[in-house]
Image 1 (cartoon, rainbow, N blue to C red):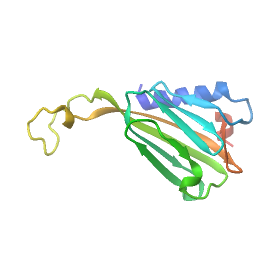
Image 2 (spheres, rainbow, N blue to C red):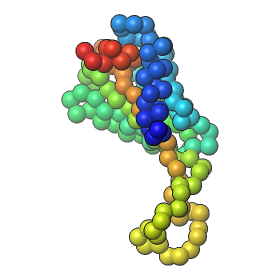
Image 3 (cartoon, rainbow, N blue to C red):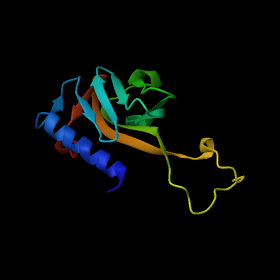
Image 4 (cartoon, rainbow, N blue to C red):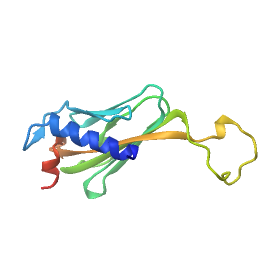
Length: 152
């Protein structure tokens, strides 16, 4: 099973068991993936945690009315404050966290374009991980909801 799909299933199961049936959860709830990434929701901010060996961590959030924001950190998982990227309308938002790991990607069968024949590990791509999920904003506050609420 593809690593991203496994992470999505873990998020769905986490939300299904952590959130009361039929409603949004209070702030402070956290969700995690099996990829070493997790998110905690508090007020109008999302805090992310990552395996300490991960690097080049990017957080992207999109939402209603064209809302989009992105933060990056070379060494630690950043937090994301919704108001830093524009007006925060009520509705459903989606986040995605991506990071590079210490593991090198498998060598490609063909040499990449521009390959100069040197076997420098600095030129080899790293394996990446990702984690995504949804949350609802009401009156400027982040609320996490279960999958049944997402369909309505």
